Length: 120
Image 1 (cartoon, one colour):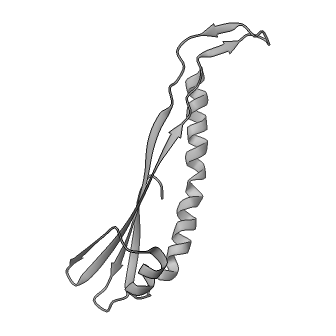
Image 2: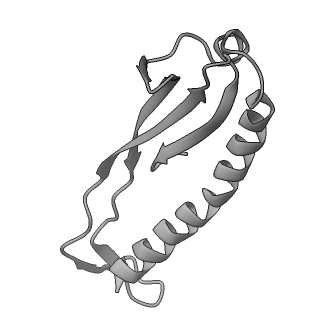
Image 3: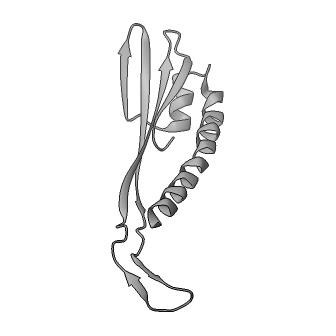
């Protein structure tokens, strides 16, 4: 019975992440049409870059580790402090990652950007 509670909690947390994507895209959208220097001024030095077919790609990688708390396997009955113990769910370590990649055209201006990962 505790597993559905954890599942609903996880769904609620992930549902809240939907706004993060829209907010991140809204912050990055003004960089489209700007030059590479503007991207570096706004984002810092890229994690890596790559050139191919007349375009340059600047990738920014963000990583963080989160610990999702576990749940005790103990519970009481009707307000009684004594109940049952067993099982439970251990804490989970989750790596969150977001890679933002900007495409810089041959003219030196940002054409587009992409977001990839579970923390965007």
